[in-house]
Amino acid sequence: MANQRFIIKAAGEEHFQYAETITEEMERSAQARGTGIAKRSPEYIKTKMKEGKAVIALTSTGQWAGFCYIEAWGHEKFVANSGLIVSPEFRKHGLAREIKKEVFKLSRKKYPHAKIFGLTTGAAVMKINSELGYYPVSYADLTTDDEFWKGCQSCVNYPILMSKNRSNCLCTAMLYEPKSVKKTEQKKLSAQFKKNISLFERLIRIKRAMFLNIVKGKKNALAKVKDKADQSS
Image (cartoon, rainbow, N blue to C red; front, side, top):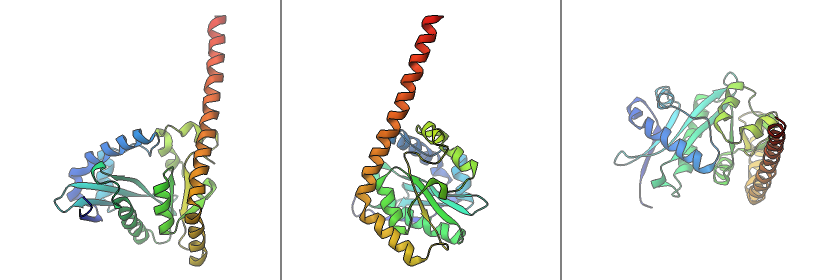
């Protein structure tokens, strides 16, 4: 498998046949992680392919191996590379990194002036993002477009996000800025992040435990109130 060669390119209508497989794997992966992006239909994936806003990875024999698509928000001022997925058969071979690089280049080509951002709980994705020039930011630095945040509704952590008025959650926000941050400063921030990636991983674990305990406490409190109401009725 280490010698497996992949063809990674912009997806088109000729790749419609893979849309259902891609959405099924997205859902399975999200369920396994316990988090995830908004559920997407095969029709939505086909639209992204038709618009030239997606990257697909295939083996030399035409087998589907990976996928990622582009979404624009806030009148195209912000761009997100979403739905990164690699077939289980081809994971742990660096394919996710190569797909991210291609979709990043496609995003820069289509939206040269847009800020590119991402939300993730995965250390591996954070490492890839940092290599591309992203750095951690607060949620306030992301798009305020309600349609983007609606996409978090299918995530199990959505109640946490809303309880924090969309200012924090288990995901780490990362941003690439084409203009407002000088390239030298951007590289410095990215290098600092990569140097302290283990610290970020630890902070994510702490944040996850803290938020989940808060949610658990609220559920227990509601359960007690319900029990008292049932006993009095």
